[in-house]
Amino acid sequence: MNESVIIAPISESLNTFLSSSEYSKVFIITDNQTKKHCYPHLKAVLPGHSVVTVPSGESNKSLLTCEKIWDAMTKEGLDRHALVINVGGGVIGDMGGFCAAVYKRGIDFIQVPTTLLSQVDASVGGKLGIDFQGFKNHLGVFNLPERVLIDPVFLKTLPEREIRSGFAEIIKHCLIADAAKWHEIRQNDFEEQNWTDLIAHSVKIKQSVVDQDPTEKGLRKILNFGHTLGHAVETCFLNKPASQRLYHGEAIAVGMIMESYLSFSRKMIDQQTLTNIEEFLFATYGKVNIESEDIEEIIALTRQDKKNKGNEVRFSLLKGAGQCDFDIVVSASEMRKSIAYYLG
Ligand code: NAD
Ligand code: MG
Image 1 (cartoon, rainbow, N blue to C red):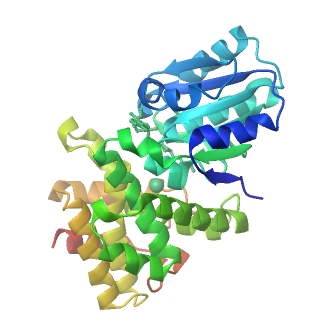
Image 2 (image 1 turned 135 degrees about the vertical axis):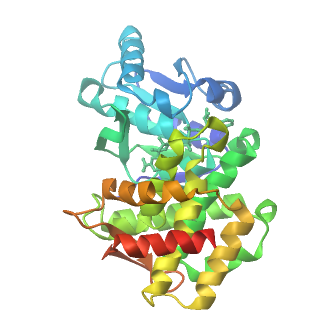
Protein backbone atom coordinates (compact mmCIF):
# COMPACT_ATOMS: atom_id res chain seq x y z
CA MET A 1 0.00 0.00 0.00
CA ASN A 2 1.27 3.48 -0.90
CA GLU A 3 1.12 6.73 0.95
CA SER A 4 -1.12 9.32 -0.60
CA VAL A 5 0.98 12.03 -2.21
CA ILE A 6 -0.53 15.37 -3.22
CA ILE A 7 1.34 17.96 -5.25
CA ALA A 8 -0.43 21.30 -4.78
CA PRO A 9 -0.11 24.63 -2.96
CA ILE A 10 0.40 23.64 0.67
CA SER A 11 -2.36 25.91 2.01
CA GLU A 12 -4.90 24.09 -0.18
CA SER A 13 -3.76 20.53 0.42
CA LEU A 14 -3.38 21.04 4.17
CA ASN A 15 -6.74 22.74 4.46
CA THR A 16 -8.45 19.91 2.60
CA PHE A 17 -6.84 17.29 4.80
CA LEU A 18 -7.54 19.04 8.09
CA SER A 19 -11.13 19.89 7.26
CA SER A 20 -11.94 16.21 6.89
CA SER A 21 -10.17 15.06 10.05
CA GLU A 22 -10.50 15.64 13.79
CA TYR A 23 -7.19 15.80 15.55
CA SER A 24 -6.87 16.82 19.18
CA LYS A 25 -3.75 18.88 18.44
CA VAL A 26 -1.40 19.73 15.59
CA PHE A 27 2.32 19.59 16.32
CA ILE A 28 4.80 20.91 13.75
CA ILE A 29 8.45 19.85 13.57
CA THR A 30 10.83 22.18 11.72
CA ASP A 31 14.53 22.90 11.62
CA ASN A 32 15.89 26.42 11.89
CA GLN A 33 15.89 26.90 8.08
CA THR A 34 12.44 25.50 7.40
CA LYS A 35 10.98 27.39 10.37
CA LYS A 36 12.07 30.56 8.64
CA HIS A 37 11.40 29.72 4.98
CA CYS A 38 8.64 27.10 4.92
CA TYR A 39 6.57 27.24 8.10
CA PRO A 40 5.08 30.67 7.18
CA HIS A 41 3.36 28.99 4.19
CA LEU A 42 1.49 26.64 6.54
CA LYS A 43 0.90 28.90 9.50
CA ALA A 44 -1.94 30.83 7.92
CA VAL A 45 -4.17 27.79 7.39
CA LEU A 46 -3.47 26.07 10.68
CA PRO A 47 -5.75 26.48 13.66
CA GLY A 48 -4.14 26.33 17.12
CA HIS A 49 -0.89 24.39 16.88
CA SER A 50 2.55 24.18 18.43
CA VAL A 51 5.97 24.13 16.81
CA VAL A 52 9.27 22.61 17.81
CA THR A 53 12.41 23.76 15.99
CA VAL A 54 15.58 21.69 16.02
CA PRO A 55 19.00 22.55 14.57
CA SER A 56 19.36 21.64 10.88
CA GLY A 57 21.80 19.13 9.40
CA GLU A 58 22.53 15.40 9.32
CA SER A 59 24.56 15.58 12.55
CA ASN A 60 21.33 16.41 14.37
CA LYS A 61 19.45 13.37 13.05
CA SER A 62 20.12 11.79 16.40
CA LEU A 63 18.65 10.25 19.50
CA LEU A 64 19.49 13.45 21.37
CA THR A 65 17.29 15.50 19.02
CA CYS A 66 14.53 12.87 19.26
CA GLU A 67 14.58 13.29 23.03
CA LYS A 68 14.08 17.03 22.60
CA ILE A 69 11.17 16.38 20.24
CA TRP A 70 9.54 13.79 22.53
CA ASP A 71 10.06 16.16 25.45
CA ALA A 72 8.26 18.97 23.59
CA MET A 73 5.44 16.58 22.58
CA THR A 74 5.01 15.52 26.18
CA LYS A 75 5.08 19.10 27.51
CA GLU A 76 2.43 20.05 24.94
CA GLY A 77 0.32 17.20 26.27
CA LEU A 78 -0.05 15.45 22.89
CA ASP A 79 -2.38 12.46 23.18
CA ARG A 80 -2.82 9.60 20.71
CA HIS A 81 -5.24 11.67 18.62
CA ALA A 82 -2.69 14.37 17.83
CA LEU A 83 -1.16 14.98 14.40
CA VAL A 84 2.53 15.62 13.73
CA ILE A 85 3.49 17.60 10.63
CA ASN A 86 7.14 17.32 9.55
CA VAL A 87 8.18 20.42 7.65
CA GLY A 88 11.67 19.99 6.23
CA GLY A 89 14.07 17.93 4.18
CA GLY A 90 14.89 14.26 4.62
CA VAL A 91 16.44 14.82 8.03
CA ILE A 92 13.24 16.24 9.53
CA GLY A 93 11.03 13.79 7.63
CA ASP A 94 12.97 10.67 8.69
CA MET A 95 13.43 11.82 12.30
CA GLY A 96 10.05 13.48 12.83
CA GLY A 97 8.32 10.44 11.32
CA PHE A 98 10.31 8.16 13.63
CA CYS A 99 9.39 10.31 16.65
CA ALA A 100 5.70 10.16 15.70
CA ALA A 101 5.85 6.42 14.97
CA VAL A 102 7.00 5.53 18.48
CA TYR A 103 5.37 8.29 20.57
CA LYS A 104 2.68 6.52 22.62
CA ARG A 105 3.17 3.57 20.23
CA GLY A 106 2.45 5.73 17.22
CA ILE A 107 0.46 8.80 16.26
CA ASP A 108 -0.52 10.11 12.83
CA PHE A 109 1.92 12.24 10.89
CA ILE A 110 2.13 14.11 7.61
CA GLN A 111 5.26 14.72 5.56
CA VAL A 112 5.73 18.17 4.08
CA PRO A 113 9.05 17.69 2.25
CA THR A 114 10.79 20.96 1.48
CA THR A 115 13.94 19.91 -0.39
CA LEU A 116 13.95 18.45 -3.89
CA LEU A 117 15.63 15.32 -2.52
CA SER A 118 12.94 14.75 0.08
CA GLN A 119 10.14 15.52 -2.42
CA VAL A 120 11.37 12.93 -4.94
CA ASP A 121 12.84 10.36 -2.59
CA ALA A 122 12.94 10.54 1.22
CA SER A 123 9.26 11.35 1.84
CA VAL A 124 8.09 8.34 -0.18
CA GLY A 125 8.47 4.69 0.77
CA GLY A 126 7.93 4.58 4.52
CA LYS A 127 11.52 4.42 5.77
CA LEU A 128 11.93 6.44 8.96
CA GLY A 129 14.84 6.70 11.34
CA ILE A 130 17.91 8.32 12.76
CA ASP A 131 21.68 7.90 12.76
CA PHE A 132 23.33 6.21 15.74
CA GLN A 133 26.97 6.04 16.84
CA GLY A 134 28.21 7.08 13.43
CA PHE A 135 26.01 4.59 11.54
CA LYS A 136 23.54 6.14 9.11
CA ASN A 137 19.86 5.27 9.56
CA HIS A 138 20.87 2.67 12.14
CA LEU A 139 17.66 2.94 14.19
CA GLY A 140 14.32 3.16 12.50
CA VAL A 141 11.03 1.70 11.44
CA PHE A 142 8.88 1.31 8.35
CA ASN A 143 5.69 3.35 8.70
CA LEU A 144 3.52 5.37 6.33
CA PRO A 145 2.39 8.97 6.81
CA GLU A 146 -1.28 9.95 6.44
CA ARG A 147 -0.28 12.19 3.53
CA VAL A 148 2.77 13.53 1.74
CA LEU A 149 2.00 17.13 0.82
CA ILE A 150 4.44 18.44 -1.78
CA ASP A 151 4.54 22.09 -2.80
CA PRO A 152 7.24 23.02 -5.34
CA VAL A 153 7.10 26.61 -4.00
CA PHE A 154 9.51 25.52 -1.26
CA LEU A 155 12.26 25.10 -3.86
CA LYS A 156 12.36 28.89 -4.29
CA THR A 157 14.35 29.32 -1.08
CA LEU A 158 16.40 26.15 -1.43
CA PRO A 159 20.07 26.79 -2.35
CA GLU A 160 20.85 25.76 -5.94
CA ARG A 161 23.43 23.20 -4.82
CA GLU A 162 20.70 21.40 -2.84
CA ILE A 163 18.42 21.36 -5.90
CA ARG A 164 21.20 19.95 -8.08
CA SER A 165 21.85 17.30 -5.44
CA GLY A 166 18.18 16.24 -5.39
CA PHE A 167 18.17 16.16 -9.19
CA ALA A 168 20.56 13.18 -9.07
CA GLU A 169 17.79 11.01 -7.59
CA ILE A 170 15.45 12.13 -10.40
CA ILE A 171 18.09 11.15 -12.97
CA LYS A 172 18.45 7.80 -11.19
CA HIS A 173 14.69 7.18 -11.32
CA CYS A 174 14.69 7.87 -15.07
CA LEU A 175 17.72 5.65 -15.72
CA ILE A 176 16.32 2.66 -13.82
CA ALA A 177 12.72 2.87 -14.96
CA ASP A 178 11.88 5.24 -17.81
CA ALA A 179 14.06 5.52 -20.92
CA ALA A 180 11.79 8.09 -22.61
CA LYS A 181 11.97 10.43 -19.61
CA TRP A 182 15.74 9.95 -19.46
CA HIS A 183 16.05 11.11 -23.07
CA GLU A 184 13.78 14.05 -22.29
CA ILE A 185 15.73 15.32 -19.28
CA ARG A 186 19.13 14.88 -20.85
CA GLN A 187 18.15 17.25 -23.69
CA ASN A 188 17.44 20.07 -21.20
CA ASP A 189 19.81 22.29 -19.27
CA PHE A 190 19.51 22.14 -15.49
CA GLU A 191 17.86 25.58 -15.44
CA GLU A 192 15.18 24.44 -17.91
CA GLN A 193 13.99 21.36 -16.03
CA ASN A 194 10.31 21.31 -15.10
CA TRP A 195 10.51 20.45 -11.41
CA THR A 196 6.78 20.02 -10.82
CA ASP A 197 6.53 17.49 -13.63
CA LEU A 198 9.73 15.69 -12.57
CA ILE A 199 8.66 15.46 -8.92
CA ALA A 200 5.38 13.81 -9.92
CA HIS A 201 7.25 11.45 -12.24
CA SER A 202 9.81 10.43 -9.61
CA VAL A 203 7.17 9.88 -6.93
CA LYS A 204 5.28 7.59 -9.30
CA ILE A 205 8.36 5.49 -10.04
CA LYS A 206 9.46 5.23 -6.42
CA GLN A 207 5.95 4.33 -5.27
CA SER A 208 5.56 1.66 -7.89
CA VAL A 209 8.87 0.02 -6.96
CA VAL A 210 8.21 0.25 -3.21
CA ASP A 211 4.71 -1.11 -3.69
CA GLN A 212 6.11 -4.28 -5.25
CA ASP A 213 8.73 -4.73 -2.53
CA PRO A 214 8.06 -2.57 0.56
CA THR A 215 10.81 -4.02 2.78
CA GLU A 216 13.62 -4.36 0.22
CA LYS A 217 13.76 -8.12 -0.21
CA GLY A 218 14.50 -7.77 -3.93
CA LEU A 219 13.26 -5.27 -6.50
CA ARG A 220 13.50 -2.21 -4.19
CA LYS A 221 17.28 -2.60 -4.45
CA ILE A 222 17.14 -1.04 -7.93
CA LEU A 223 16.60 2.30 -6.16
CA ASN A 224 20.19 1.85 -5.07
CA PHE A 225 21.64 2.22 -8.56
CA GLY A 226 24.64 4.55 -8.25
CA HIS A 227 24.61 4.20 -4.48
CA THR A 228 27.08 1.35 -3.87
CA LEU A 229 30.12 3.24 -5.15
CA GLY A 230 28.32 6.58 -4.61
CA HIS A 231 27.91 6.03 -0.86
CA ALA A 232 31.49 4.82 -0.64
CA VAL A 233 32.72 8.01 -2.33
CA GLU A 234 30.45 10.12 -0.08
CA THR A 235 31.82 8.45 3.06
CA CYS A 236 35.44 8.65 1.86
CA PHE A 237 35.03 12.40 1.36
CA LEU A 238 33.70 12.91 4.91
CA ASN A 239 37.31 12.84 6.11
CA LYS A 240 38.38 15.61 3.73
CA PRO A 241 38.43 19.35 4.45
CA ALA A 242 34.94 20.88 4.59
CA SER A 243 35.49 22.66 1.25
CA GLN A 244 35.72 19.25 -0.49
CA ARG A 245 32.67 17.63 1.13
CA LEU A 246 30.16 16.20 -1.30
CA TYR A 247 26.41 16.51 -1.13
CA HIS A 248 24.61 13.18 -1.37
CA GLY A 249 23.43 13.67 -4.95
CA GLU A 250 26.90 14.79 -6.08
CA ALA A 251 28.37 11.53 -4.79
CA ILE A 252 25.53 9.54 -6.37
CA ALA A 253 26.29 11.20 -9.72
CA VAL A 254 29.86 9.88 -9.40
CA GLY A 255 28.48 6.46 -8.45
CA MET A 256 26.09 6.44 -11.42
CA ILE A 257 28.96 7.02 -13.86
CA MET A 258 31.08 4.27 -12.30
CA GLU A 259 28.17 1.84 -12.11
CA SER A 260 27.12 2.63 -15.69
CA TYR A 261 30.65 1.67 -16.66
CA LEU A 262 30.21 -1.61 -14.74
CA SER A 263 26.91 -2.15 -16.60
CA PHE A 264 28.75 -1.52 -19.88
CA SER A 265 31.65 -3.83 -19.00
CA ARG A 266 29.10 -6.59 -18.27
CA LYS A 267 27.54 -5.89 -21.71
CA MET A 268 24.27 -4.82 -20.06
CA ILE A 269 24.30 -1.38 -21.75
CA ASP A 270 25.88 -0.29 -25.03
CA GLN A 271 28.62 2.25 -25.62
CA GLN A 272 26.18 4.99 -26.69
CA THR A 273 24.13 4.67 -23.50
CA LEU A 274 27.28 4.89 -21.39
CA THR A 275 28.46 7.95 -23.33
CA ASN A 276 25.08 9.67 -22.94
CA ILE A 277 25.05 9.07 -19.19
CA GLU A 278 28.58 10.21 -18.53
CA GLU A 279 28.29 13.29 -20.75
CA PHE A 280 25.12 14.42 -19.02
CA LEU A 281 26.39 13.74 -15.50
CA PHE A 282 29.76 15.39 -16.07
CA ALA A 283 28.02 18.43 -17.60
CA THR A 284 25.66 18.69 -14.62
CA TYR A 285 28.04 17.86 -11.76
CA GLY A 286 31.60 18.30 -13.05
CA LYS A 287 34.29 15.82 -12.12
CA VAL A 288 35.09 15.05 -8.48
CA ASN A 289 38.75 14.97 -7.60
CA ILE A 290 39.33 11.45 -6.32
CA GLU A 291 42.97 11.02 -5.27
CA SER A 292 44.84 7.79 -6.02
CA GLU A 293 45.10 7.08 -2.27
CA ASP A 294 41.26 7.24 -2.01
CA ILE A 295 40.71 4.35 -4.42
CA GLU A 296 41.31 1.37 -2.11
CA GLU A 297 39.38 3.09 0.67
CA ILE A 298 36.38 3.55 -1.64
CA ILE A 299 36.52 -0.12 -2.65
CA ALA A 300 36.79 -1.20 1.00
CA LEU A 301 33.84 1.01 1.92
CA THR A 302 31.55 -0.78 -0.56
CA ARG A 303 31.71 -3.74 1.86
CA GLN A 304 29.52 -1.71 4.27
CA ASP A 305 26.66 -1.56 1.75
CA LYS A 306 23.35 -2.78 3.17
CA LYS A 307 22.63 -4.82 -0.02
CA ASN A 308 25.60 -7.13 0.50
CA LYS A 309 25.40 -10.72 1.54
CA GLY A 310 28.37 -12.47 3.12
CA ASN A 311 31.63 -11.28 1.61
CA GLU A 312 30.18 -10.38 -1.78
CA VAL A 313 29.53 -6.80 -2.84
CA ARG A 314 26.25 -6.66 -4.71
CA PHE A 315 25.33 -3.97 -7.20
CA SER A 316 22.19 -2.78 -8.94
CA LEU A 317 23.21 -2.25 -12.57
CA LEU A 318 21.47 -0.90 -15.65
CA LYS A 319 20.31 -3.25 -18.37
CA GLY A 320 19.66 -0.72 -21.06
CA ALA A 321 18.55 2.82 -20.23
CA GLY A 322 15.30 2.64 -18.27
CA GLN A 323 15.83 -0.81 -16.76
CA CYS A 324 17.81 -2.13 -13.84
CA ASP A 325 18.84 -5.47 -12.39
CA PHE A 326 19.95 -6.17 -8.81
CA ASP A 327 22.11 -8.55 -6.73
CA ILE A 328 24.96 -8.48 -9.22
CA VAL A 329 28.21 -9.50 -7.58
CA VAL A 330 31.12 -7.30 -8.65
CA SER A 331 34.79 -7.91 -7.81
CA ALA A 332 37.24 -5.40 -6.39
CA SER A 333 39.23 -5.44 -9.63
CA GLU A 334 36.13 -4.53 -11.66
CA MET A 335 35.46 -1.67 -9.23
CA ARG A 336 39.06 -0.51 -9.61
CA LYS A 337 38.53 -0.36 -13.39
CA SER A 338 35.31 1.58 -13.02
CA ILE A 339 37.00 4.18 -10.81
CA ALA A 340 39.88 4.43 -13.29
CA TYR A 341 37.33 4.93 -16.07
CA TYR A 342 35.66 7.76 -14.11
CA LEU A 343 39.03 9.45 -13.61
CA GLY A 344 39.71 9.14 -17.35
P1 NAD B 1 18.23 18.10 4.90
O1 NAD B 1 16.96 17.68 5.51
O2 NAD B 1 19.42 18.18 5.78
O3 NAD B 1 18.03 19.51 4.16
C1 NAD B 1 19.14 20.15 3.56
C2 NAD B 1 19.27 21.59 4.05
O4 NAD B 1 18.28 22.40 3.42
C3 NAD B 1 19.09 21.76 5.55
O5 NAD B 1 20.01 22.70 6.00
C4 NAD B 1 17.68 22.33 5.65
O6 NAD B 1 17.52 23.12 6.80
C5 NAD B 1 17.58 23.16 4.41
N1 NAD B 1 16.24 23.37 3.85
C6 NAD B 1 15.25 22.46 3.75
N2 NAD B 1 14.22 22.96 3.05
C7 NAD B 1 14.55 24.23 2.72
C8 NAD B 1 13.90 25.22 1.96
N3 NAD B 1 12.73 25.00 1.36
N4 NAD B 1 14.52 26.42 1.82
C9 NAD B 1 15.75 26.62 2.36
N5 NAD B 1 16.43 25.70 3.06
C10 NAD B 1 15.84 24.50 3.24
O7 NAD B 1 18.67 17.13 3.68
P2 NAD B 1 17.88 16.36 2.54
O8 NAD B 1 18.84 16.30 1.42
O9 NAD B 1 16.53 16.89 2.31
O10 NAD B 1 17.69 14.91 3.17
C11 NAD B 1 18.79 14.11 3.52
C12 NAD B 1 18.33 13.05 4.50
O11 NAD B 1 17.30 12.27 3.89
C13 NAD B 1 19.40 12.09 4.94
O12 NAD B 1 19.36 11.98 6.34
C14 NAD B 1 19.00 10.77 4.30
O13 NAD B 1 19.35 9.65 5.08
C15 NAD B 1 17.50 10.91 4.20
N6 NAD B 1 16.90 10.08 3.16
C16 NAD B 1 15.88 9.26 3.51
C17 NAD B 1 15.27 8.47 2.56
C18 NAD B 1 14.13 7.59 2.95
O14 NAD B 1 13.72 6.73 2.16
N7 NAD B 1 13.56 7.77 4.12
C19 NAD B 1 15.69 8.51 1.23
C20 NAD B 1 16.72 9.38 0.89
C21 NAD B 1 17.33 10.16 1.86
MG1 MG C 1 19.99 8.45 -2.33
